[in-house]
Image 1 (cartoon, helix red, strand yellow):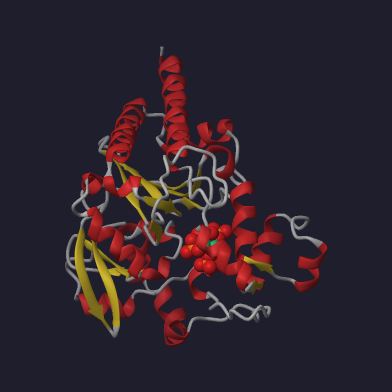
Image 2 (tube, helix red, strand yellow):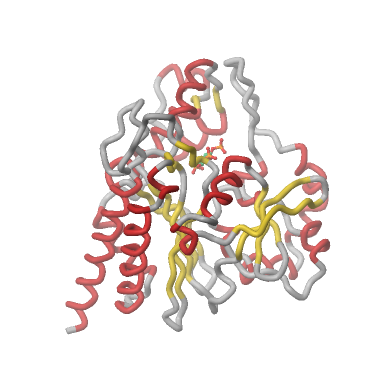
Length: 351
Ligand code: I3P
């Protein structure tokens, strides 16, 4: 999350900022719930008026600068259209009741210092947003990396609902064949659609989520270059290479990341919030700049739920349906050890 447009009229920004120009956000499908295949992707209603002026605004120099330099996180966020400018030093994220409930609890939890500050709710143009601390406003030309934590990215509840009323997604089938045309079954090829849990499970296996308990979602370098092309990055070795490049070979930055990750882990292990929730689809946001300012925050709680009564998790045990384990700390253990490997490789090569 990034710096606000302090000097601009806020209403102007809300009107002018594109909900998003990525495929994720311009084309989302509501669930039909009746098992029918969804039609081809269609734009959200809210966004259609935007699209009329989209081609004009998208290429205006203001928006280009705005997106590249002031809001690099827009390029990394999974559902980029959910974000808008807030007051100075804040960002607005479309309200999701589950996420709002998490932030309310987190503000009085020991994890408070590792999540963006929740600054209440804001109504804009008939929609409600949560206002969150802009995590990047103290950085100069930061490098940003989004790492999605856990061995799975779907809630147990999503699996149950999908079994009760399977909804077929053509867009997910398309995303699947773009990555691997042999991945869908014969039936899925005939339907040209897959269910969401099927797609999510395949994505988790295809990336490092299942094996390592985390996956790289996106990286934005200080020069503005960004990549979300990590869907097939699975092995420890390939992640070591990517992280080494992300930190620009700077061992001090790596050491600071390791320290921060260990602080996060120790705090999570003792946190009332963390020990009582199934944490799914949540990311760690890594940020550093050329002045060696470094931080990591926990973000995205739209799929973080209180555990059912009587269930406890340690976030490290293997997931079996019904036990609600999410593999978050299993992933964090691996992430720390991979960063340590990067650190060793940098210190040994500098001797
Ligand atoms: C998306 C990713 C998101 C998920 C989204 C997927 O796939 O798994 O986490 O949103 O579902 O399309 P990909 O990264 O391959 O593009 P949620 O976590 O909110 O479910 P959606 O299309 O239903 O929003």
